[in-house]
Length: 369
Image 1 (cartoon, rainbow, N blue to C red):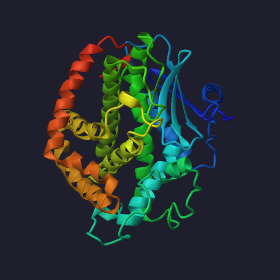
Image 2: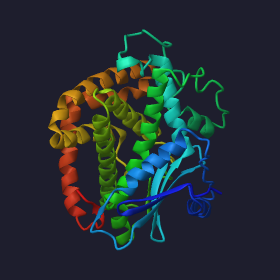
Image 3: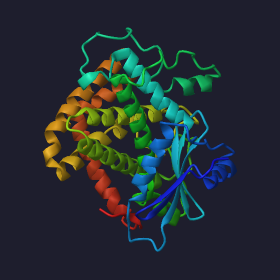
Image 4: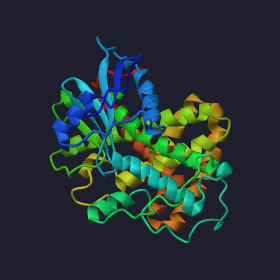
């Protein structure tokens, strides 16, 4: 059982981290264990404290009479998964230990195979690493679990020095993957998605990987896909804005873009596998990654001065993704995000999202613009 290590309240949310109530909920609802965040932990625990402070500051409109209780924590399970759920007037945001492991795997693979986190992200063709990646990017541990194979001992490569700048950037990439996953799930709360579904008596949970759903009507599937797109764009805009404001160069922006693509890849790499996808409730991977140009458009509309740095980040990110795809061909689908066709398709989806926004305009307690 976990102990309540922190609670934060500044806006509309009363946020608790890895507390006893979260542990009881996870046990009763899923018969799974909640991971304890130990005081000596110098990575995950501080990261969750930072995220909690961010979430606590959001304000809803109309303002709730009392702060909305939100519990945040980690579930011990090998799936690269995350969810947002409502139960008895309380929201729960959970990320699985498999998702944390996936982020670490991807960071190590990109660092070891292509030197993705070198200074200024400058990658010279065939300058480092082996000729190919021998394991799937970021999901080796989970696939091994599905196959009943024990984890590969050298899954995380050679030990890394915490003082190495490249390792520090790899750690920032890992933490950004985790932030994106949790901000995406938080988006389902503050954009009124769960509230709308609850009011319609449809469901009380939205998760990334689940048993194949067959109960959703075509109309509900369209709404669910819209909610996923909107949560992706929300999370990306938050992280891109923070990255732009926290650094004078494009490096942090590149990390956010790579973290987004890597996380989406981990959620969609099993697309089409019975029992492991979310059926029609999630957009296809080829459409889901288009949240990146949609988020960039939103950022540029609000912060036009960021255009040059955003363009530099896109160019360097594109080079890294191309390099990863050479080493691990299945990741090649992510290269399409940087094409002209992607911008046109993103514009089509944005138009459809405006239509869906009007169709779900009765959502209540949405984030203050």
